[in-house]
Image (cartoon, rainbow, N blue to C red; front, side, top):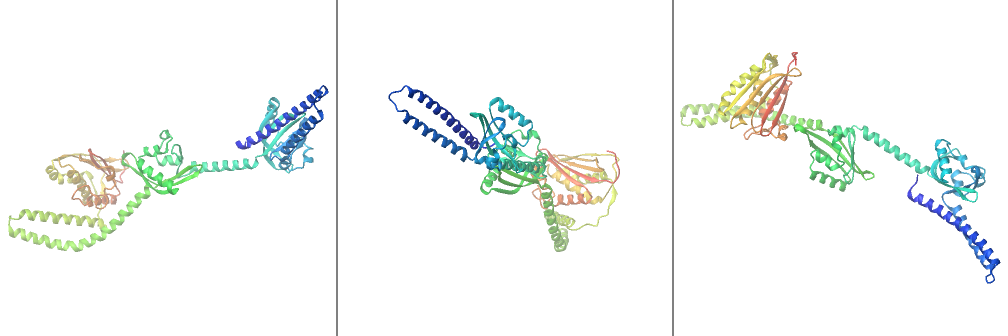
Length: 525
């Protein structure tokens, strides 16, 4: 092995030696020719010419001698059966022997293994008369070294030449680099964190198995070897990518969070670290899925808000309820004393007071645990009562109910009035989102996992995916005059019953609330 410069240096040395040998032979021939010409010449002085030729030969031999002894590469001349004839100082240093000690050896004495590779080298050398290879040599000290060598047969009259170079250190460094690459490869492939290696031009990248799983990628998704295209396909805008890459070039390192949208309105949150020029102009992204962490943080914020609401509700209950009771009493007295002249005004005042009272009740439900008495009850019965209660309101909005109740459903241990409150909240919302009329579909059936499934579907405008996840948060509502407390209370009641609420919606096609309540009775799916 060896670099191009090293190869060029060895080749240049070999060419110089060959040229000098050729020139030496040529000069000898000229001397003979000159001697022959001198015998029949009557007008030139042979003495002058011989002196010039001899001086030239001495100069060339001096140059050859200097090249032989002073070169940094080892040069060995060997004869028949591999017996070393001559070696320069660099060869002595490589083998750790004096020149006299070297001359007592054959060149093959130092070959570490005379294996198949050795036999092949001998065969090539005899067939081509030259060989360039590398092999391990065993030094007299017992040390093993990797030497790069070039062999030329019949380099001179009755001898052969070998040029040696110690590449053990380079070999060791290459082995270290290879081991380092293998260690990194094992870490890269086996890491539980997602990793992406990518080049500065964003044209090539490599992603580890964990990263593919976290990003929900398949092998066919990696067809285009383009780092930018990968993230654009994942839903990241090119503008955001440009901003992040520019920031990375400026800082050399990036840390942050990113959200990637998936089908069915799912959002996955990732925390990432980007390091520029980790090695050989390669950049590294390490990322982890923190979706659960983000959701827990949202729940904690929601819990903090609930605590604040609880304290606020306690104050409202004491500070507002008493004045409201007095207001209701005086309004009733005024209404009785004034007759029908201001009946419309009194009706509006009483309606708004009732609305305030309803909001206070919802605050109180959120504020502290209620004294709940659970009883076994039929869910279809509770739903039927709710639908009957809201039928009049539905007629006013030109809304009709379509109901399907599965027979022989197991009874549910629950608080009927609280569940009825949940059903009222969701059905009233369904009616109000259809100002031009429509149908509300109500289904009660058995679901896998010993759960009762209540479905309430409207034909309204639907809810965008980014707003669905906010439903049930304090004061979040899609209605102009809503407080958001109704759905918040509904989520809390269902949660206290061990159930869940899932919202399925498509803009322009309506919304479907799925309520799942667990039952302990064994049923067949």
